[in-house]
Image (cartoon, rainbow, N blue to C red):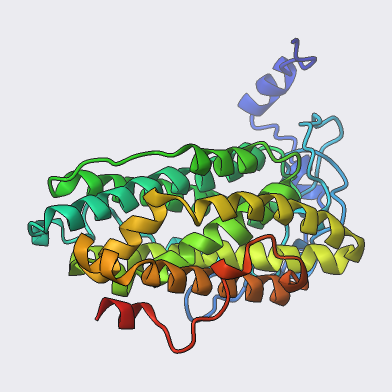
Length: 365
């Protein structure tokens, strides 16, 4: 590839003599005098979303990396972005989620009390390591997916791109912290299963950002978020409780983005509801298999009950309750986004019907 541009040597000679061009200074369409006022937390993305700079186009007028609102020179190259409509990637909460993400970054090296880990019953340790193995496996796809699509998103939607960058970092940290937990207390990594890998493949092979986002943010990360929330009851020690809490705050942002992205997408084009139903149909079919996978069901039951013997005495009580919570949260998210899945859920009723008065805390006690 050749670049059809030449250095203006005559200009360099003039500039050396102090004969500046100053076209960028004199001939500008920028809104001189527009001043952003910092909010209580500092200068946020919303604070600078003012005047023409805050006008986010429904369709990007060009496919360059020129900052939205800047004067763009004739001849900037076409960078080939494929996501050029705002509704394809936008959510009304994305600016706030970005600010929260950068404010709440934490370190899996320094912010976890690793020195407080104590030996556990071998079966409980193995259960925790198996769960950590699964989580380190599934969390990384939530980094790979946005990374796959980031370069295809038009620069006019830079706030969404910036948020997705924080998600990549969050998920790298989640994969790190669960891998460290598996190796920190004498257990080691557990078993990776084909059914989990099939679900991850479904996300990465998505033909559109819409499809992948629905499968990952709404379904996959939603399930993980519910699991993190149950961490108080599942965690065998305060160290794991700390891990679950910190991961949960990150995961909640990702799910909030995905839910509001779906809501924005459907508001812009209600006819897309059938497409999203079809995406989730495929995901739920695999989730049925995941919910009946021993490497998922049994570690959570053992952690909730405290031992293999207690878990076997209780049967799948803990797993049943956790599934009910997961599916209930998922259906609420879909409803909030404007997509009612209750009438076409692909999961067998036995996996999600209410268990009256049951909680993970009650099973654990």
